[in-house]
Amino acid sequence: MQQPINLDQGLICPVCRLELHLHTPEGRPPRLSCSNMHAFDAAKQGYFNLLTGKGTSFREDGPEMVAARAAFLDAGHYAPLASALAESLAASVHGTSSPHILDAGAGTGYYLGQVLNGLPESTTAIAMDISKFAMRRAAKIPATLALVWDLWRELPLGDASIDALINVFSPHNGAEFARVLKPGGSALVVTPLPEHLSAGAELLGLLGIAGDKAAGVIASMGDSFTLEGTQQVIAPLSLSAAQAFDLAMMGPAGHHLDPTILHERVDAYPGPIELTAAFRIQEFKRR
Ligand SMILES: C[S@@+](CC[C@H](N)C(=O)[O-])C[C@H]1O[C@@H](n2cnc3c(N)ncnc32)[C@H](O)[C@@H]1O
Ligand SMILES: [Zn+2]
Image (cartoon, rainbow, N blue to C red):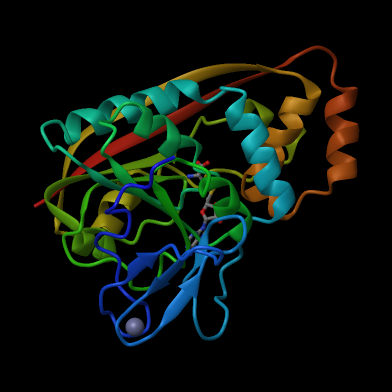
């Protein structure tokens, strides 16, 4: 694939905040570096780990959780959410010739990939997540730089460098989202509705959803954003034991669940496991 020339647009060095540029020397891994000689080489799976200094205290999604997420999402169970996001994002950057998109907490990059399918070919994107296992997968998305980074830190992106962002089931750093978005740029934030997967909570050992998250999201996005609209997406699911296993393992409960016990429970369940996925998309606009 021909590499878009401006894949590194807006990137800044996490050490000194000067611009980072992408170099692709022959026979060596691609490298991001600034003019102060801070350099970050791509891992062999194509992502860049920009985290410096001591490790972060956040708990990344491990390889089993990421594999479960990839299997479940790639099977299309949450396709209605992906379509709704793709449609809203395309509308929000309509008229921008080469949009630059951020997926903050991208996981495997499933939603970003779907969103990019609906945008002009000249679109470029940044996938950011603290999990290197997730970024290994996201690095395969065309026209995308996959960065291992902690969303609670200052983002390695310049002010007003991003046209629109998506933030799906991931931490929302409103102050940094406001800084990196262009004025008028959209932030699409997805959280679960209180009834999300509620029928499977006991069987699958899911963690409860703490009340309704809508007001909390608005508060965490802060005064630089206005809430433009809210959509609900409801997806009925009829799952095999293996699919239900992946669904449980891919979420926050995956940090705690014992895979052997979970397998026993879902295998013992008679017939398909019927659940309802219920999401809220809040569309914010940068003032
Ligand atoms: C529930 S997953 C959602 C992933 C993806 N958006 C999706 O829906 O498939 C939450 C993601 O947030 C990431 N995450 C958690 N804390 C983070 C942090 N402080 N900085 C960056 N990513 C973080 C996890 O590694 C995980 O991939
Ligand atoms: Zn630097």
